[in-house]
Length: 420
Image (cartoon, rainbow, N blue to C red; front, side, top):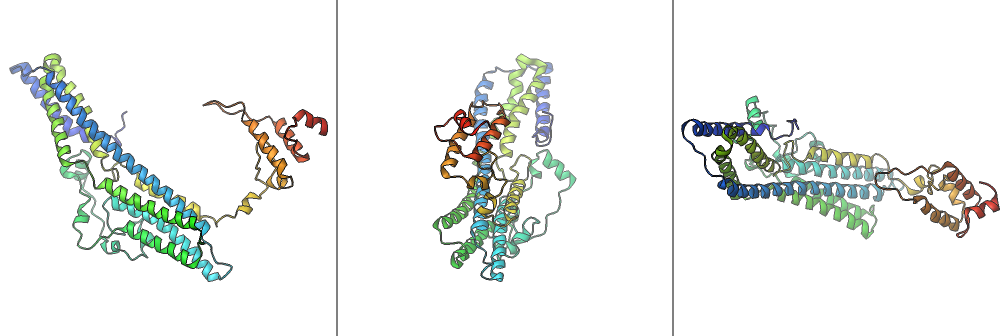
């Protein structure tokens, strides 16, 4: 409750001081000079209008915020699909030619790096940061021929302490305009995410032409669908960024809100007296707080604390891609045939190799018996009881001898094979 990091309280300091001073002046005049108090009907009428306007603005801002989050979630999904498809299904021709095999491997690594580059480039584009000179981007796209290469510019100077303090307090004149670099550019800035998608499409075409991505329609469809999703994410985030609330609505909401706050002392004096001053301060904090929150999250892609953590999203995608590339494409027979693989656990501790010696009928019977381990059902919030060790050991032993028939009970089995 007392946290300031991420709170809009610092930005409300100056407006609250102004409201407090105004309420003090009106209260002192009404108490000592002339009664300025009025009837409270106006509060009810105007309060409904203010609440409706703030509700629409806040709900619209929250909708934009969650739309942005959903789009970045879709980007991560598309990145996973395309990265797995390229890393696992694109063949490396080591057996045909060693050099071609190395080229195929390095091509796959470069493709997966471009998937990461797309996310990073989209982040900088949404923050109106043209160029490719950023530390998290330049090594990923330095080899590409793009318009953004010619748009590099020196890093901006750090704001002074006075300017940072003004930004913290929410003074509009001190708020930087991130679009100025784009508007003042004398060279074409291009669209780096779109250009990266073009290079990815060119790589996918090479895979089709060389046959390293075999001509399976499902693989071709998945790769193109992933690129389509990435393009949809880029267009969707741009739509959110470049479609703010209508200016007339924003101005009208601000005017009505401030009119309501400035008229509060006149409405409250007759019933509250000197308490009008703190009451107006509290009311202004609540009303302006809701208005400021809606304004802050209206653009969810910036650098503010309450904006979407795009840096963390990009880092997560980078980590996911690195995990996919950390090992060669796995072969199913290598990991399914290991002795640690117990396919019928917890019914049996036998490995895949042991079950391979049994007939399909015995395996199906064991699978039908494993269903009983789920009963009695475990309720919400309860922990399942561990299976009895004697039961597991017995099942393991009698599965080594041979699975019972589909209609055979455990007691009949024990008569045939002895105690388990």
